Amino acid sequence: MEEGISAIPKRFLEKLDNVDICIEEEPPRGRPLFGLYQGIPKTKRGHYGQVLPDKITIFKGPIERRGRSKEKIREIVKNTVWHEIAHHFGMNEREVREVEKRRKQKSS
Image (cartoon, rainbow, N blue to C red; front, side):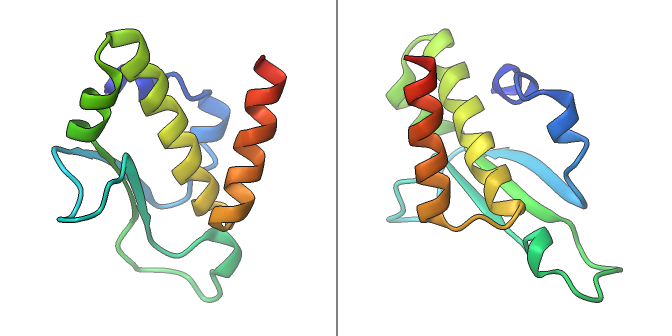
């Protein structure tokens, strides 16, 4: 899991503002998620201060069940962290999916 997180370039991780990245075993009941962003996106912050950090949670169980190999798990974690970071920077789900689609087309 940590290897997937560390695969994110440092220049992006340094731009995170008041965000913790943590790993939990399973998502909330009934939610088939690899990751979850909870917080106030940077684009929606007004008078922002003295607040608890935003949280990016990576869910170990679903990722390991889907990945099965270390290499695939690392790739899923990296993609999941990218996805949740995009939410931190203000992108909605549709926008994130569009960017992911373009990124996959470039790497093919």
